[in-house]
Amino acid sequence: MIFLIFLSIFILGAAIGSFLNVLIGRLPKGEKITGRSHCDHCRKKLRWYDLIPILSFFILDRKCRYCHKKLSWQYPIVEIITGISFVLITNYQIPITRQFSNIRSLGNWSLFGYWLLVIGLLSSFIVIFFSDLKYHLISDYVLITLFIFSFFYKLFNNVTIQQFSNFFLSGLIVALPIFLIYYFSKERAMGLGDVYLSTIIGFLLGWKRGYLALYIAVITGAIFGLVLIVLKKKKLQSKIAFGPFIVIGTIVMLFWGEKIMEIIKKIYGF
Image 1 (cartoon, rainbow, N blue to C red):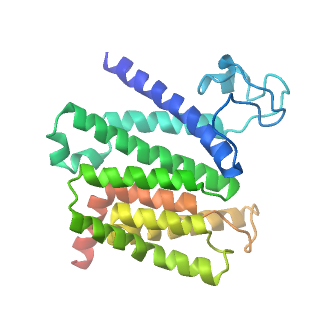
Image 2 (image 1 turned 60 degrees about the vertical axis):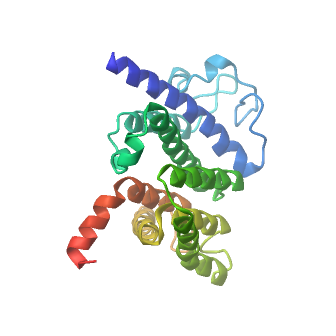
Image 3 (image 1 turned 45 degrees about the vertical axis):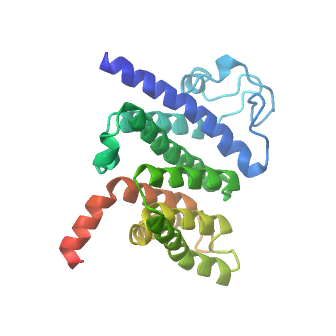
């Protein structure tokens, strides 16, 4: 019974992931997200049996049914990641829902609302990760959506008006170094989307955890860049999207920030 419940949740997540693929593919190019899906190559409209999450990709042998050109691995990867995220959040295996006893004591409907908020945050992060990785662009619509989810996430955790003002200030503090890099590099090192994203991250996490999220982003980005240079996939002057690494750092601090802060406190005494 439990297996069937989690399987259903995974399927729901994979279906949402299919929609996220639409957002990833269309928003950075300024296309409408309404209308039937089509092949990226021949633009042929796809039928429902070509759009079954995960399965259609492999049944069609990673090819368009009509023009037979190869399809991107992005589609099943996004669907699988989203499905797994739904299951993990539902099963409370990620500690985020255990950090707030007030949420767990409010009843099933509040827990469901909280679950939707966390899913909304993760879905926004997935779209940002892949759209910036693929197009080096972060849609303003997704950033606005992320902020809305972040705002209500704070409300669910009983944040006071004074604390809200502190979190807004934290957003500006965290975004400042990214803005300076963006400004002085004349958008060559950082994009304006990275500045906006950092502002929201600071609001969501607070300035301490926000800076740690950026630190993790810089480290993971540097490692990824060095690997690509060693493999001769990129040159030293090549531009690498920073948004995906901000997302990685944010997710780490959002879900495991409490433990990381405890470890830092034990090591450095603050």
